[in-house]
Amino acid sequence: MAFDSKGTLNKVMLIGRLGQDPELKYTPSGVAVATLSVATNTSWKGQDGSQNENTEWHRVVIWRKLAEMIDKYASKGTKVYVEGRLVTRSWQDKDGNKRYTTEIQADSMQLLESRNARDVDTGGEEPPIPPDTHVEEPEANESDDLPF
Image (cartoon, rainbow, N blue to C red; front, side, top):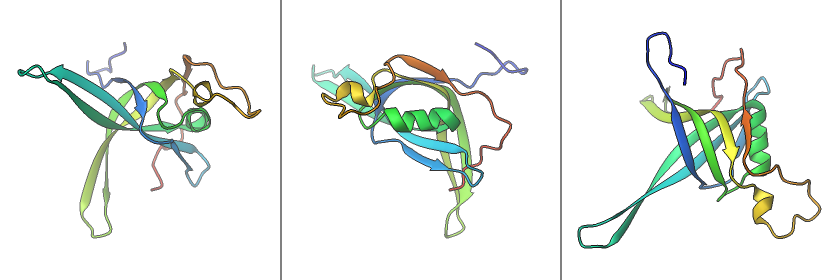
C-alpha cells in the first residue's frame, strides 16, 4: 500500500451490490464516466436477541474504459468489489447555495458476478466477462471534472 509523501492514506475498499443499473455519461471531451450506487450491509444481534441490519449506500464514480465496461456488464444487484479513494466535491445549486457531496473515486473494480451470469438465457448476446475479472484504470492526464 502506497502512502503519499506526507505519510497519509486515503483508501476505500467495498464489497457490495449495485442498487441500480450504472449511469453512464460522457464529458464534453468524450471521456466516459459512470456513477454507481453500492449498498453494503451490517448486521448485529440486539440485547433482546433480535437480529438487526443496516444498509449503507455509497456513491461510486468510475472513469474511462472501466466505466464503459461496468455499464455493459453490471446491473442492479450485481455484487462488486471497489477500490478507490474518498473525494469531496462542491458546487452551487440553482438557488446559489454551496452544496457538497462525498463520493468514492474508483481506481479499480472487480465484478464478483456478471449480469449475464445471473441470467438463464443470454439470448445470443456476447458472452459475459468472467466473474472475478479485475481491471485497473490507468491514470489520465485529462481533467476529471464532471459536466453535471
